[in-house]
Image 1 (cartoon, rainbow, N blue to C red):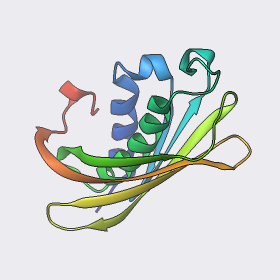
Image 2: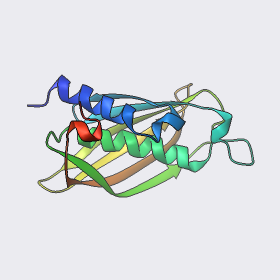
Image 3: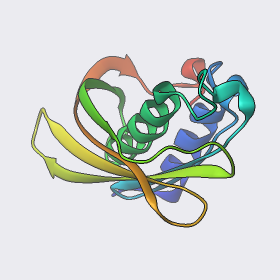
Length: 144
């Protein structure tokens, strides 16, 4: 049975990851679903003044990843593949990714994510495959 405590521990683990000191995202985890919000800053821009694709990928992969992680209470999952589609540029406001598990078996999870701007327009989408790793969920990786 999935618990709210598990979801909050995943959120704290995410917040403790060093990469997130740069992107400053927020995460909300639910059963089989996760939302990541990243406020846009000029540091994310490429030379033409819009957000670089790496930020799209991060938001989409994180949302899909944590949708999967919400269903696994013993080990850290890993992304095996992730396909990203950048459908519209963004240069201000915030981006919000919504991830959802669309398939799970004993060893494989498939999750999809959509990315929206502050006006609710889709700016990207992606899907990926995920598997369980051998890394236990523990305080040593921020799961507390």
